[in-house]
Length: 304
Image (cartoon, rainbow, N blue to C red; front, side, top):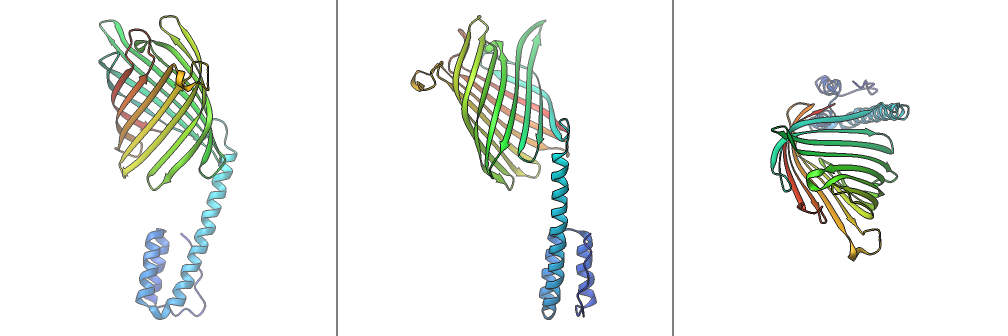
């Protein structure tokens, strides 16, 4: 509650004053503004006194907000390495097509730490299916992405990524990238950011081959809160490799694309139901493997 001093020689009717004081005590900025505007229209002769009350309220609100922001910034700057992490755990089922057509279980973990200029993102996912004592699906993915925001909408990023899918012929694939990103939209329930930069990738195939290559990476992250309980998410990462010749784009040996579209429905403040569809494309898969895999997932997500 913000306490305001009564203007000298107050002439505002008692009913009006009580109405405004009640709104101030509730602390809802929208209601306070509405009540003050109503009072101004109802008692136009007391507009000057009402304006004084409004001015005091705005000044006190601004001072309170500035103090809270300063306190929050100090807490962030003095936080320990393991403090201020938030995240979500996901558990559910999937159905895949492509190199394997089956249904199994999926689990994922996502962590984020937001600082003043820096943020850190950790992600991991595991898909597994076993039938009649034989493993028929085993896919791993993990990534770590630090970001440094050095402008209003511009950031620099680093990315370390690992994935493995033996049914696509990939025993292990490691990628390192760094570059710049831009927040195209950020606010009002919609956010869109893009990023791009060079990358270096090492791929170990199940047939024993190993490839090292210089690459280019482009990414897109999109979130849209359709309404209060429904959110649409879109994440895209594409890597085009040049087989060690970064400038010879026409001789590229491999392009991979990971596209994930999801729909989250908020059940409670911490619990959400999620439906997602993923496409994994590799223009140069292992011998005998298909270029495209798709996965449809239904899961429960718990935030913490």
